[in-house]
Length: 385
Image (cartoon, rainbow, N blue to C red):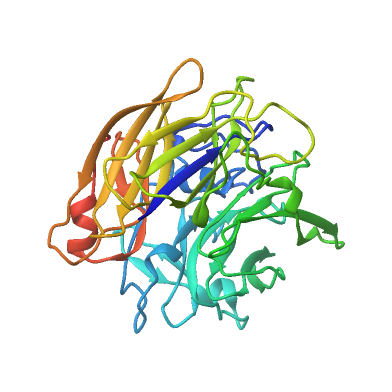
């Protein structure tokens, strides 16, 4: 039997510490009224001020939305969060939320006559890739196609091809090598994930953005019988206080398939602080820990680090059941299993959101653009296990 696993590999580089709600304090420059952009894609998803994270699947007239293609930011530069999302027909949209809570399409204001065509979209993240203080969007595309960027340019957004061709499912952004420019970690279906170094080129009005593949940044060597999982389909860069230096680090979390059988488990690794690649490796200076999840064939969907705990959202590949597990982190930086609980559906067969956010009230709420009453209402305000 193949078994789903999640690997966590700790980076050697520091990032700014986590702020309320599992996000970050923010370090980018914003305009007078605009909201700040956080320094990682994880921070932008989990920032405390983001409170409305569900979009009805039919929010755009005549279109159905891809649930996992939603990401949020102050795209209209008006001091509140708006949404980017992609339809099943492959069109990108920017949505605004009214005072009554209704989401409406206002894409024309930001796209104008520009290209809005996308791809077989699987996932979207928000980050400031061109360092202009405004949120940009990276879009993962499946089917061995070029991934896409939507970059802020003045008061509009421009569809950009970064010349990255992978069979994408998930993406994460953070400054991995400490040069102040955001890098990317991308899944590539049935293959090793890829890390791409961000490059800025001055263009007179700011920076153009490009990326360079860095195979040496992720070691695939087997050490102490430990190797990277195969068929990796989820990646996260989580800045968390799991390192030995007392600073938050961009920890790389990989969800994939183990060969062999047994229960699914989580692999946690640390590497020594080192200023040269590889930044992530299965070769560790400290112990190797396996955490057994209680459900066979569990696939990692989301992860949140909050108050010295991390929460894993997994989904059974056998019956689609979602469960949330929590782990504490002890003084040595090692995780200790705390509890697991299932997330139930209002009606069987409607499905559940595959992403969640920890809110200021201390609960998990859906982060989803496929909401129907039965799909999202049943998953609102989930108490941490």
